[in-house]
Length: 331
Length: 294
Image (cartoon, rainbow over the protein chains, first blue to last red):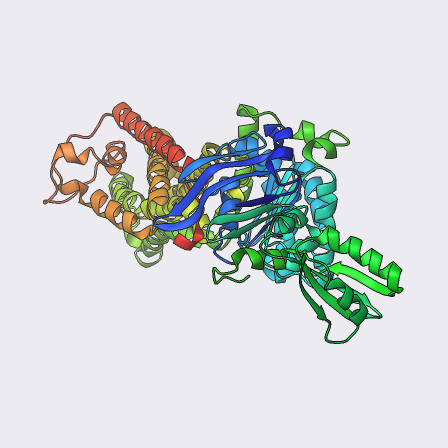
């Protein structure tokens, strides 16, 4: 497994006390003879952590394990110091928005939240207030008194999210939380997750929509076939792949041929290609920092006008594809 | 925003009590608030009300026939004879059939129904001990089944008196054995709900298809009268029937058996209930949510 970055890696995690971490120690889960996840060793610090992988990679299994809906075949899990199998303690601090698109029959959004807060043990007035706050946060106030059965898919998704955040948890586990939401609602939800993470929550999100993961994650955990392939901050995971996969850098400029001619002099360069539209250069290099220094020199010497410089494969999608390259998988 | 940081006014921190009997009681009340209305008044309640109304309809029909079509014969059998007829109706119809299947519909689906509806995870993701969930589900089932079959018992008892004059009926009820018999029948209904409830709650935790244990147990309870006395005691119906105030003639093929004493019958039913509930609580602690299997 590849690790990278402060957030997802052991050195930083080791500095955080156990009761602030979510920790998997050698966890495996088999459904009969079918592998769910295998030999997972993982610590998840506060912030937004995304579980990334195709269907069947073990994301939901991992989430169900950390919330006690499943029991591991072997290994140990601790969530902020609690066992997942003591829901009375654990679920005060954890909210889980599952993928299961179902609700107890015949209830309105408000009644659903209020009733389950009462079951949690909140008194009536507090339960009603918390339910209303949660509905407000997910934008369901106007539909609060409509039957859940009459909600659209996106509204049901938001109702599940409201149920997960209503009791103000420290850990929010979200299984494909953006499914069924329109672009506006997605943006609002991502902003909400960021806001929750900034205030110190663990927000753990599974998604197969990689550009959205890229946009919101502090840390990613990349999974395939029940195994964790890599974890950490995406940039650091990408850097750790540098030897095998040279960094691709797209330079938008007014003289790509000049830049290309000089760039060829750099020993660390693997490939230089003028962009199809003639307005830039695509460079693949094993020494990203060295290339930037050389680029600065070339600009000064030749007066090349630069429009933009960006790393083309420093994102979840590219990193994930590098990781599963050769395994025949694709997100 | 976190549980500690978000409690600006202290409402949440003080609202959710520390784990203990007070919190568990509140959680059970919360469960009752969800379960009882939907099992008494919503779509799920249709089965139990049909089963509860069946004996009422039969007794009503009998009363109507006596009042409307045979007015001259009114009171011909007398209330002591009516008590024997009622004992047959109570044991054969209310307890052996309606209460049995009423408990099947309510208790087997108490947890299994939520698995089939794919909503059990909401319960498991609440900060509630699973044992408390079992207690809440069981109590809500008890309230529902007892309400339905106690009402059915009271209604059928009232209908037994209906063809008779007020003087004769009130004399039998208040001076004769009517009131005592009614209370004993209600107690039998309560004990039946208690024991069958625990049995079917446990069955619902074991069986994916609840019809199978229901049919097997119905066969066993029905065959009870033909079994030798030691085997008869391995059933719920033996102890319930032992408590009935008026004996019933079970026909020439039944094997005679000495009924249990009221104390022994009640102790046996309470013990069975306790064992099954403890087993259910242990079982649900290890229960996983994997709807793909269901």
